[in-house]
Image 1 (cartoon, helix red, strand yellow):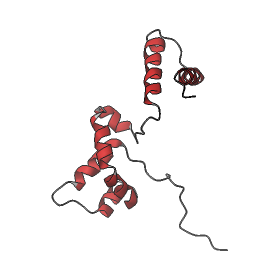
Image 2 (image 1 turned 180 degrees about the vertical axis):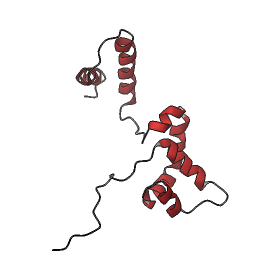
Image 3 (image 1 turned 30 degrees about the vertical axis):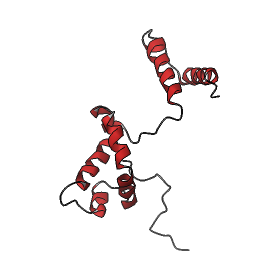
Image 4 (image 1 turned 90 degrees about the vertical axis):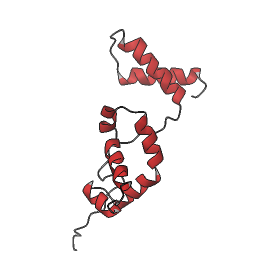
Length: 125
């Protein structure tokens, strides 16, 4: 029985790009003489398919970047659209006003319970 030197990687097991890196790649691609997709992929240690997918989603990435500050871009790997944005907004308001400003402890199960309460009030759950 021989052992293979190539290992199969699970989906998503490669290097994750942060939003700042995505913007940098898009800037590279918009140069007068852009580097090839292969060169960019090697430079950022990602698969060429990741670069092609980024090209397809470039408008979405740029819009998301306009709405974020620089510090957030440096730490954000990907931004998903909220399934229930109004629920998230209400939950955020509850945390900001009701918990943080009163210096109360904030535990994950408490946030989940409040999210369930809000979802029931909004007829989502």
